[in-house]
Length: 178
Image (tube, rainbow, N blue to C red; front, side):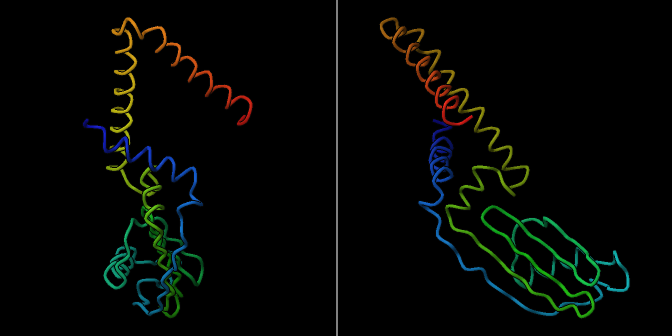
């Protein structure tokens, strides 16, 4: 019973991942423009960006979420990307003026759940949750398989069903996937 909620979560998101077109509705990105302290993206120094100040500014001013995924300095321009499950924020900054364009793209609830299922942009703690869930699901499966050996009247039919299920999966993969 400990694994019931997480098993249900992964089962449902397995369907939403396989049929994303059934559930996903496009969301409108939010666009912001502004000017930040141009000393933070010092154009006279090719590597002169104050990463921490930039991150704090966007978090404080625009409430960006997620982790800093990429900070790219390219000549007169700087790009900063925040990513999280079901979320992306991308800023392009003119290094000479400090002017920026920020696009925040929140995705649908289904996209958020799918990202959690895949562990995309979720960090180490959620990765541990996924691993723990996999261990629990493995134990539940092995417990069910082990129990069939104690049911004398159903042992043969149960083991045959396990073999048929495995064979069907292998046949589908062999003929229609690979």
